[in-house]
Length: 125
Image (cartoon, rainbow, N blue to C red; front, side, top):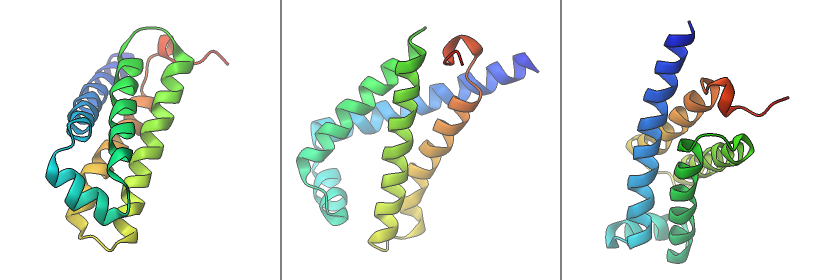
């Protein structure tokens, strides 16, 4: 059981990291399509994407490095808040269901990674 949980954790975490890094970089470099078509449509200013992009990259570092369980909890919480915010933002503007796929996938990976994280990556209670 422990081996299965570790495999699930690492698969979810690697995919989560790849998704957050790729979207974070897109947000940081300010790709025109991302800024104009998505963020403005959702009602967010362009500078907001830079903030989110930086926090996504820092969150990936926090989740991947060993130790620092409190920092990891904050990173997972941040990912959860950003992805639920993205889903609800798309809902608010009446986007097509396809627009929900990315945020919903990253939200699912966040929950899986958090749930299956090994004991040495958890807060001691």
